[in-house]
Length: 203
Length: 203
Image 1 (cartoon, each protein chain N blue to C red):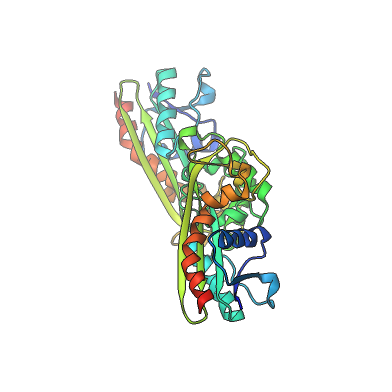
Image 2 (cartoon, each protein chain N blue to C red; image 1 turned 90 degrees about the horizontal axis):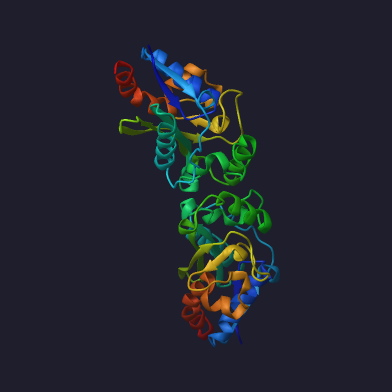
């Protein structure tokens, strides 16, 4: 029998991503369920000052409400020329939560006069795992790159079309899912959780 | 005969502000002229990473182009919850230069979930004085306060309606010009230039 683990997200792409990473790592015995698969509960608002704070609050809420081990992430893009913002405000940078097109347009406009040598940044993902027995784990993955001058590519989501990972010349939205998992901030963070998830499956 | 000093601005409010501060300090013999009073020249774009860089570039350009001592400022608002941004991008935070209403609305939206205890910030003004003899002076004034949850007041410009200076409960847009000069970031910066301006008048 497999151990159910709640991923505190309704984002189908995030759930698939974690399932792919578990599969690829050969972690068996873990069944990922999303928020749509469990009874509704009051979810923590993402109002923390740090990714860590937000991820941990969401994972604690999910574990407490369902009795399941819970994984939650908070992710965003840190732009050097904006002192690390949009950061925890990435999803609502232009003022409305989840409006990718508006967020991308605003970021481009803010950086319009910023020269190439100052367009560096990174995607950051913080993942928390909270087990009802009291175990808490918080990990961080980073993906360094630069901010392009126009969106490119059709894949991914969020700021992917503007983000050119270091070492290449294509945007994150031009990578295949497998390529993205191997390099991305969320992939790097989630892989740090694999030993703990594998241990849960063996309990 | 008075010594002409160029203030590298077309903002009538900034010119009046400096004239008031000179008058109040009893600095005589300095005639402030604005960019509209001198032959047009190529002005440095404000693309620096710091207020200091922008102010100094503008003052150097003005002095070189006109042969007059030149004062230039770069100012903005630093919000703690945005890691010090909008900063040098204050005037074009929403993407279009000088759209105060859009900038204010965006800042409010970005901070909508930020609790009162994390709404601190400060207005910053950096002023540079460049004299064609080679003298360069760069000074900085700061005005600490908090970011309100809605605009209040009809005076001032920029982010004044959102900014509540520490020690009071009214916004910068509710102060009289004299009250604002006495406390503001730009007043604090400009007053640091008065000895050098007075010395110019005596040359």
